[in-house]
Image 1: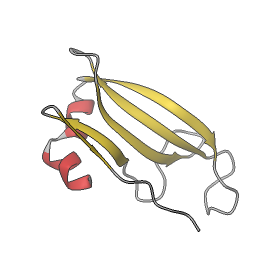
Image 2: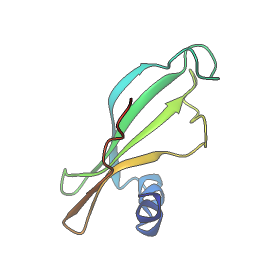
Image 3: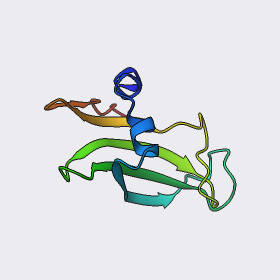
Image 4: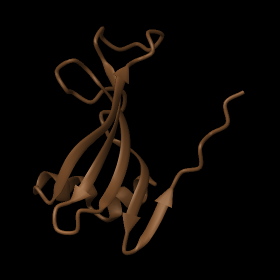
Length: 94
């Protein structure tokens, strides 16, 4: 999924202002994670400004100042590229 995200320059296009950024969900991080107090788990969508369609749905952890934690990168979960939707299958938790 990350390869597709990078191949289609989604982060760069977002930096160029081609997408509207929407926080779909934001909740406190699990306290067992090694992140600063006040950090949040977020699902973020990039919405194409021309078509108003979601291009990417990503997960990340952010600190109270908005800095992306863990890898420092958005973790794509769903992408819409050239008419095709790519998504990760949910992992089964036991």
